Amino acid sequence: MSGKYVAKTLEAVTKRYPGETEFHQALSEVLESLSPVIERNKQFEDAGILERIVEPERQIIFRVPWVDDNGKVHVNRGIRVQYNSALGPYKGGLRFHPSVNTSIIKFLGFEQVFKNSLTGLMLGGGKGGSDFDPKGKSDNEVMRFCQNFMTELYRHIDADTDVPAGDIGVGAREIGYMFGQYKKIKNVFHGVFTGKGLMYGGSLARTEATGYGCVYFCNEMLKDRSSGFEGRKVVISGSGNVAIYAAQKAMSLGAKVVAMSDSGGYVHDADGIKLDVVKRIKEVERRRISEYANEVKGAKYAEGCMDIWTVPCDIALPCATQNELDGERAKVLVKNGCVAVSEGANMPSTPEAVQVFLDAKIAYGPGKAANAGGVATSGLEMSQNSQRLAWTFDEVDEKLKRIMENIHATAKNAAAEYDTPGNLVNGANIAGFEKVARVMVSHGV
Image: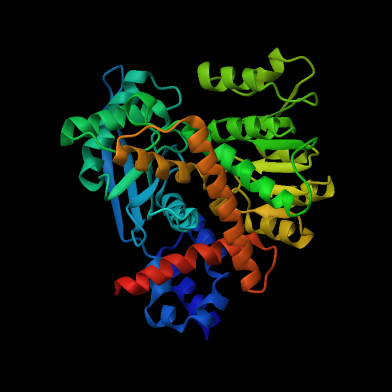
């Protein structure tokens, strides 16, 4: 009966929200892992947990008018999905990118519920953003957009209700503008945002956290196979915050990162990526990754970002965006000798790619577990804000490392308990779901 219950729930929600393909994909990936959990815990079905957990508690959609430097009025759409607050205030980033729509934000919010559950912290799940594109905009244009975005969103967030953070297109600049506007309107100074600047409540190691956490998780998977990063070739998609700090941590553990990418294409440097060059090009000059090949002798640039997975490597860290690694390229990775994949992005591997990794029995860390370091450190930032404290970098990094080790152990143990040893997809889904479901039952309908 549990399988029928899962199938019925999935059919109902996909019918209710037609065309939301990313959302449907995330639902399928999680729900298909849960039949054995429902089988053992009939109270979850009796309490309608699946029907409730797939439906966001609240969705806010609003217009964001703003004026460019030439005086022209533009209108974008803002979205905040407050998905589940069983474990604590809604927590999840804001994404500013032209691709943002309700399907993508709902998939991200749904994943965030279980990711946050895995951290062991008191955090619910949510996500938000806009189809506004910060690329090519002046600082003043970005400021005006962020201020108008917050003029609506401020009504729906608070340090104990919903605590946004950054994501694609939302970095320290954007968070600063939004936090400043929130403070002006509400006349309060508290931890309503994470990823803030260090001078006004931010946490050391938050910038590095998602990338570092992805590598810490991968290292735990490798330890289970009596291995590690030392001497390994690593390919990392993306060249933003997550990718840069995943590369930094992998290099510190003795690996050689040989390729990185952006939305236009990828660079391959057989001698090892020079991270200082990448950081200058992407973080300071805000240029394309292709410039790396113009500056570094021997490096090669190729158009087509997805083809980065054809570069032979031992470890692959997808750190760019959803569905960037498909089944065919997953087969190439495995054929070329890849032994571990750890996801720094949200749902970067298609279902076909995931199945390739599972069939090949390589170490595979799904995003909701492997990239939970960012939100974990956001939770640590919230703790520091509540106590009016500032921990050292090493203190935060040590707590992050311990959280990632615990997430790996939790997913590993859940997978074994439900008779799929080594399958961290099932393990992460089951462990994240069980905690939320039990609390939902205890709270009543």
